[in-house]
Image (tube, rainbow, N blue to C red; front, side, top):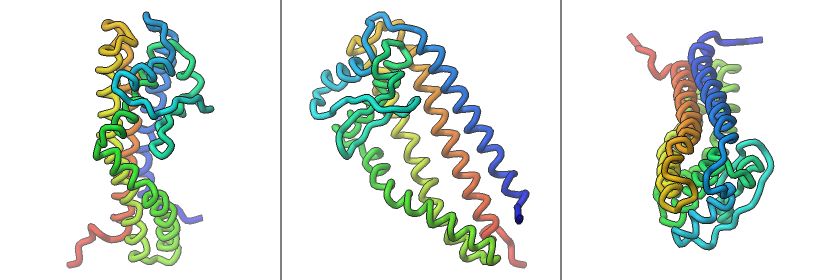
Length: 229
């Protein structure tokens, strides 16, 4: 079986970084999921308060399955919270729920980067599949043009990962302010709830770095940086 050792040089650091970020956010969430908020609101209730105070009344909140599977669906205007977040009154649950509510506020206010990320989803999904097909064929056929074209398609995933960074940071920033201003948590609890959001953001940073490293590897194998003397 063919294997390129150079791939490990670029893929391994990204894999380690992503693993560390994942373990870090799980550790932070696990710790603060055992710390109840003083107000005793659940994640779902906190998100509803945050949305209502902002005048957003067309977003529904429902429970979904999976660990930290929380997300906002702009198509159906639905905020879906995992069981560990939906019914828990912990600081971790409230932080995650308000972060997702932050995405709903972005949508309601027409936040441009959220719109850009949503627009990139179809092209990114298609490009990711086709890129691997073309790159695999390129390696099999020893065709650098195939690899290069596949790398260009893969770059859509890189752009998506980079656009995701300000979207996630902005949603957390909105949540950090709103959690205290709306009174869903006490003022002294803000820093602890924010620690969960900061840890979660590092997973997106790790994902973006990993995507950039893989793209760099593909470009090298496509001969982009080769000097023709």
